[in-house]
Length: 408
Ligand SMILES: Nc1ncnc2c1ncn2[C@@H]1O[C@H](COP(=O)(O)OP(=O)(O)O)[C@@H](O)[C@H]1O
Ligand SMILES: [Mg+2]
Image 1: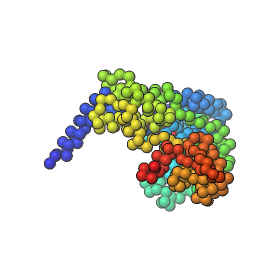
Image 2 (image 1 turned 180 degrees about the horizontal axis):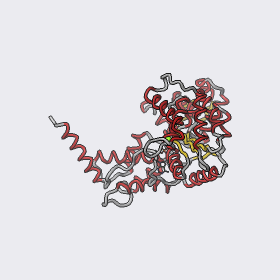
Image 3 (image 1 turned 90 degrees about the horizontal axis):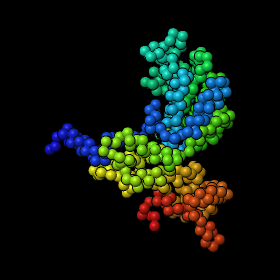
Image 4 (image 1 turned 60 degrees about the horizontal axis):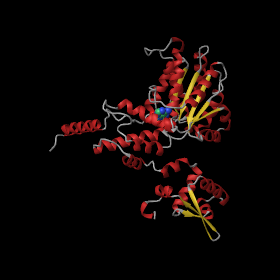
């Protein structure tokens, strides 16, 4: 019988030894948006200039809300958080919230609570008297919602919430100060149930002194305008986040490693040069992929007690994370395209426009257009036999979509 306490102690001392073998003090690749601590923040010069311009112009009255868009893991939340701290430092009122999983009513209460908590609570946790009565009421409501969820019958109707929010903002803005509202995961508002909320935003985001940044997917604006067409003119600026350049990707890895290396380490230790190159090549400049691949590679290295991590370990890590090329392609496709690709996989990886149109219950014209787009991108092949044109999945897509035993 082993003593369980001793067992855990032994196991963690082995990890410590393995960590030492890799010349690391800790695994420096934790997957979290960059918050406040910007020593790991790389690149994004173009985006930062755009943001600085927007903030600068807004201070002199020309306010234009902006949407920050990009694929998953590209760094939207991190950028939003940089804006938060920059705006705070300029003494603007700033509030940062996530749009996910809340009803419109809950969201507005969260928004008001955030504004009060982050901007009118004094350091000692008291409220300045001017806002006392009103704010205290909102805080009470917020606390009740937090502990009992939105299902409890708190009598605080939407119209009243909206009036209070207007009151709050108009009374608390000081001369020359903006109220900056940062909303992450804004695609969550692209639902019918959020139409009222979007309509409210439509007038609210036009108020003098309110500047808003919405972060979301590459199709954020399309998604929002589908629900409320008026949203488009509220976001005249779109900040599109491209992948990191190769240099920036190397920089991201190196900065994190440097922070965690022991004195014995040098360069990109514990990674071999080939390992680093593989990571940079395969992760397409997406920070989240780079970080997760590095982190997983280090975990494998620790488990195996290795002294260095080569490209084979990196490849194993990628397989485990499912960051195969096929997955990367799937991430690039629009929802309509990916539906077609899945139907093509279900037909064994080879099919015609007519067959796919039948499966998807759509017109051959539409399916044909999508297929030729996907063909142009090089993700499927064409094979002409007789009068039929067959579309065939690329090997990369077959690998992820068709189970091994069927995939000949
Ligand atoms: N400019 C950057 N420099 C360094 N690391 C970054 C940068 N942007 C994002 N990251 C890292 O990449 C990961 C994903 O970033 P995140 O902001 O959460 O992306 P998104 O919100 O677009 O999904 C996080 O671990 C974050 O720390
Ligand atoms: Mg995010």
